[in-house]
Image 1 (cartoon, helix red, strand yellow):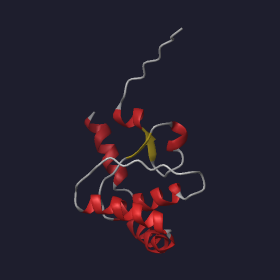
Image 2 (cartoon, helix red, strand yellow):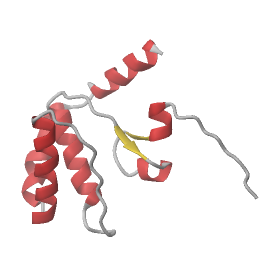
Image 3 (spheres, one colour):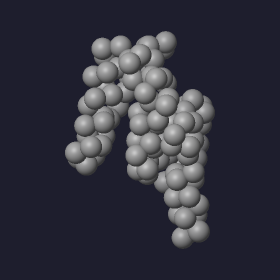
Length: 115
């Protein structure tokens, strides 16, 4: 288990921080007012080390992926460790280095047939 944890940490430190920083500087000005509010709220929680549970829901085409990618990049430029977790495999494919909750948290898969 320790080796798996060390691999996870190694992966989280294996980003090109200069490239991420340039991306953040380029993309923050492109946020619309609603995205900027969400970005500010989440980054304040990170800065204040308050943590929290945040749920982002909006119609397709409103920039959720853009916003989440920017938040992930911002946090990674700081050398902070984060794990992007999605509820499904399809959702996990939308963000860079995102994995399913089941694979990251080693949740059991209990399939039952109910008739």
